[in-house]
Image: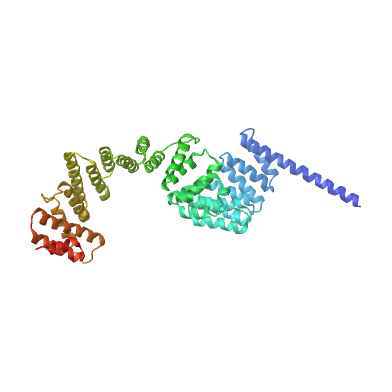
Length: 472
């Protein structure tokens, strides 16, 4: 009896194996025809569908073959057949249907299908991953929450790097950093390290970004992206020698590197940091020969070039480029106008020829006047600076060139009920000038004493005020 029992079982198993093999061969023939675009695809698929009505795996394989060839219509038909074979609980079918919607940019529908896949197979990461990637456009935080749901189901599965990627793509760099920071650097893939480093760069967390770069270079020492960021971070951290090393690696020892104005500009900044103005100028000029997507970015490089010429004390070139920089804007800022005036002051201070020195200071005075014309709220600063410029033009105070500016400064500051430290400093300088002007240049003791009295009111211990008031 036992022998008969095993004989019957053997026959049944043999029959099952033959049937399964036939189904597998028919499905394979259909899939090969789809992929190779050979034979009668329609007929082969029909045979495979008929023989595999209850074989969800075979049907989804056929559906996936159509999808990979870009035939989403037939992919959808066969995915639905697989779903029917799986009694509406077959997760791979929901995933493929989600993929089809994702290709059509129907993110909401795709997310719904991926959610169904998760529901029927909560331990499979695929549904969670794909849901997160399409749902990030709707809600990055909702996408990350889905990944946290996966973590609850599968503590062994890593989700933090993908969470960081989602936040990075959504420009939520602070959240990207927090997610990536949970992953050991040596466990990150190349793209994770780049995105982590870039997130730190955007938020000016240069030291942390540099650590990611150093880890990336262990994997790919000739990677242009890592070498570029290494140069950027070290420049920002004022590790200028190191920045130049990374710059050399970027320009001379990186694979498939394409260079932008930022590359040359950062290398120029590093040379500028080392007071190597000529090398900095060379890099800035290279930057200016590249393409820019807006004039403000180009203006920034022109400004850096001007600064490098200031470092060389080549003020004519510096002023030339500074004016080019300002011309990029419809209306230069108050700081920009003040910068131009300051450059003329620096130039004047370096000149020995009296006529050339006078011309530079007069240009500075005109630049400050232009600043006041364009920015009325800069009156105090302008009058203070014009007073100092004109004191350079009239150091012996015989012409009183600085006098109207110091008087205007007193007019603006003295009435203030509350005076800042800067106010007191400017008033003190104004009173001291007027005391000297009336006493030394004009021998007018009484007027000088009147200003000494005012000086003593704001600075009771001022020695100059005391001495003038004690004069007979």
